[in-house]
Image (cartoon, rainbow, N blue to C red; front, side, top):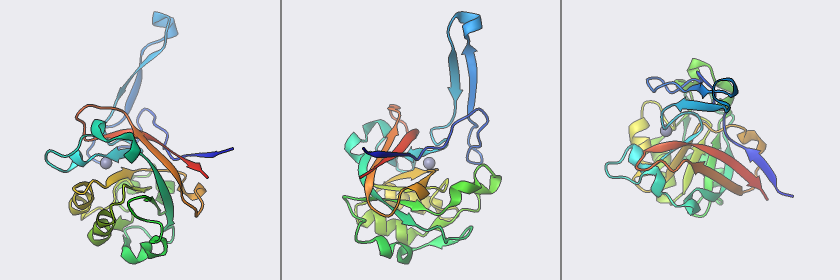
Length: 212
Ligand SMILES: [Zn+2]
């Protein structure tokens, strides 16, 4: 019997968004009382909550989210335990060396810094641990398919170079994951499934893992 772990944050009206991005709004368009059926309207950015960054997010002419094939969204992955990291602390190559035997083109990585527990406080978006541009390059050079994390962004000050070095080589970025502590230490199968938003730069995803 496979074990499923939901890695997706709840989405609700007024849920915090990345500073400067539009807020998530969910409201009734009509209800059983007004029209004999319930139907809602959702408004949000493509980077709301648990989501994937497609190369088009940062790269001129980059791959849009609807063109990423499913075999790059359903991948083997391993959790890296980085829960010892403090707010704003750097995550460097040396932090990932214990997992190097797993991490390659055939196995993605999810960075568990324990930061998901800070959500929804404002500092969730500002004080998170950050990966260095060198580590971003290390992932990209290995051909890692997805670098996922519980932070809202892989980096604060260096966000542009960190995103660009990975997205320019086709390493996809998944942000805002939850429940990473439930993944154990062995590789598993990750599903990071976006909406098929034509020519869009990213999408909220339903992220989950199936443990072996
Ligand atoms: Zn994003």
